[in-house]
Length: 478
Image 1 (cartoon, rainbow, N blue to C red):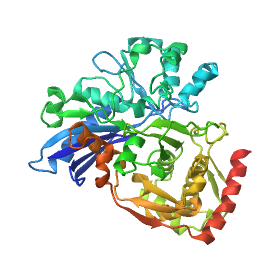
Image 2 (image 1 turned 180 degrees about the vertical axis):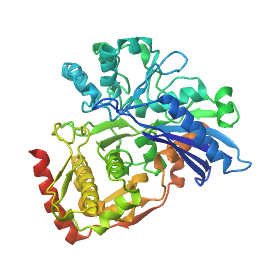
Image 3 (image 1 turned 90 degrees about the vertical axis):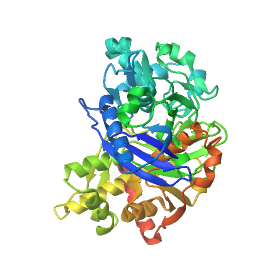
Image 4 (image 1 turned 180 degrees about the horizontal axis):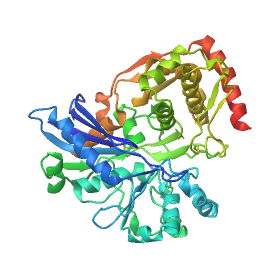
């Protein structure tokens, strides 16, 4: 008896087969493209998501023999929009969380009455479903009018699996179309923005059965039809579940294409300064505060490609070059940053470059610039000063030299969570809840991965980095 988890990320889909004791039996991954046809745009073809999912599921199953999958769970990248027709076919390519074209549409939000904006309990960001739908209604009216559904990425994938439409609270609450106080779609805000309320599906708990695997999808994947499919959760919420973060207190840093610092809370308390986000957790009980960083793995991958560097070369530069990269500073703002970064006009740059700087200096400076951006987000969390440790998760946190640099720059001990793919593990646990293995998220606590101390700040380097961070702040504040 085993569970299948599927995590639809920004540039790849990950699949895990996990037994009901929490052991990973098989893992696979398949990539797809993210395109930027115009500056500030970020798009992906959902048809490629489905093809990659089929390939990844088949590959994971091929490594096992005589395995019985009893349920399927999902997690996925947040905020994006898939406009789909009645049958689930996309009417255009998907718009992703890193898309910034809807900046002007935020004026529609700014013009809302204050009491309505307070119900959103979130800063206004262009790469969310609400502003992007406003953009589509204005600039691509034909596509908008053809659409029957406006779906989050993982919800579109579940449509492919089950022919059923639904979303969950963790994704719905991250659209800028959700009333955090009422815990439901914000119908009055949707109406005030002139959007079509019927585009938005019913909200179903993350661990509920949202449908069953259709015969068509079962044949494509090589699985039995009628398997229960959980609603699933947004990737950050699923990562919390997958790492056993089930109670308020600890702060977890997840590193991937973006970076997210999150902390569970028992009440929906919004940041009065509008720097951090507030979303629903996957456990059906909590909310979580999140400081998100656009310019993390997205920028690292761009730099790696531009410099024709391997991931090992990039991360190894964290140890091969001294702190400060001998005067070289990198500002990582290749895309518009989230609201904790108050200077929206920031752009990327190398500063202080000299003829004696080598390729490894540039790679090292890039890592430092990303880490400084993460520190800025961390300091925006209200509880940042109250913790001496951070839980570290995500595929972008595995290299020891990179971990040590983060510990030095953040001046926090880093506890590694013993799972390389937290979100997809959370998806598999949601499959188990939907399949009746566990009654709720709290019953998965005994399966939580171990945590271990992986990096402690070296105080002599902390002092050096504090000075460099001050220089970094001066440059982004100018």
